Amino acid sequence: MQTLRYTPIPADFYRRNRDRLAAALPPHSLVILHANDVYPTNADGTMQHRQNADLLYLTGIDQEESILLMQVGENGEHHDTLLLRETNEKIAIWEGARLTKEEGSSLSGIADVRWTDEYSSLLSQVAQNARHIYLETDDHPRRYTDVQTRNERLNAPLREQYKNAAFNSLYPLLSAMRLVKSSEELSQLREACRITGEGFSAILPHIHPGMGEWEMEALLSEQYIRRRSRFFSFLPIIASGSDTCVLHYISNHKRCADGDLVLFDVGAEYGGYAGDMSRTIPVSGHFSPRQRAVYSSVLAVHRYAASIMRPGVLKADYERLVRIRMAEELLRLGLLSEAEVAREADDPTCVRKFYMHSVSHPLGLDVHDVCPSNPVFAEGQVWTIEPGIYIAAENVGVRIETDVLIHSDHTEDLITTAPLEPDDVESLMRGGKNER
Ligand SMILES: [Mn+2]
Image 1 (cartoon, helix red, strand yellow):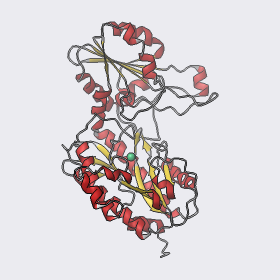
Image 2 (cartoon, protein in one colour; image 1 turned 90 degrees about the vertical axis):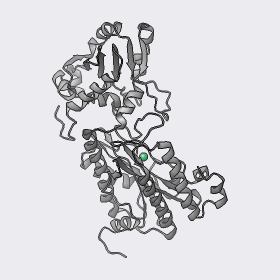
Image 3 (cartoon, protein in one colour; image 1 turned 120 degrees about the vertical axis):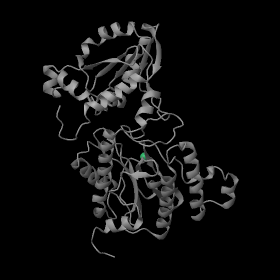
Image 4 (tube, helix red, strand yellow; image 1 turned 90 degrees about the horizontal axis):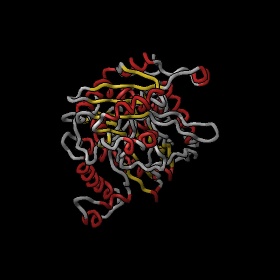
């Protein structure tokens, strides 16, 4: 299906991903992967469909009720079947036609495409012979929900039905694969990051004291959607004053008072990939001396983190080194004492009073993308770098976040379209008007 909104990744990428997954599986494995549900709201309402990221990664199919079956043979050769929801007259009139078999095949590179009404009979044929059955489980360490996913619900009876097969999770394999980005993914991520920064820079000249946080959100969404982003890649955080210290503030309902900082943690989604950027600005257009001091400390920690994010470094060691560097800045700002820092010089947990989160997470199809536990940095990975200092007693919260691609000897900032230096923030906010 032709989409003019964004350029899809060619089918060869999805074919390669399935080849690599199959090569990692033991002989006579069966992979079963379902689309995510369309989640209900109230009455006859639903949320917008959000595709299962692993299914998207292996097929490129962004449609509800889709299913991928992969039958792996003796030597990694595999036969793949894509099952799609068939369009009927009612669907065509109310929702618009769904993918044809030909469209499904050309997007995914899978030759064997069928309608979902064949699923039960096909599954019972192929599952009988499988020695290993690989299912989707969401093992993200921070996942917390009572809601059962479509994969969990539809796969639940299989363990009883196919007692001779060994059941395994796809999560460790796919999270390791998804951590290193291909050139096709990088071009989508670069575009998501470009839009994220460029849209933000475009609204800076229009920000002034008294403006509502929601009005900034409205300006930003216009900038993103005009640039072909489908929507924000996560609920945008636009927090002024005391709420700059609320890490996941999303109500965006206050007017900004003169002298406030405004913390933006926002991202545009492009072609299924997420941008994720934080910038902190003075709503008046000028940082106070204290705000500038805190900003400069966060920026110094940010630059340090980028300088030590190198292939071969253990993520946990990197986080610890950043905490040590952060302690220096918190000392300089008068927020911690020498004694507090000296007590745990190797890993000063006292910094947690003013810096409560970790500095980096992987980025990709998901904003907090999947990765194996205890990851090691490597070339081709994309991570955020987002230190912050939050001083609730002073209504000063500053977070600065960029998205970077790891190279052999440096990290490349993918968001070059938004200012980092405090002078550049102020100058963009003046927007050429020389009011100073
Ligand atoms: Mn982030």
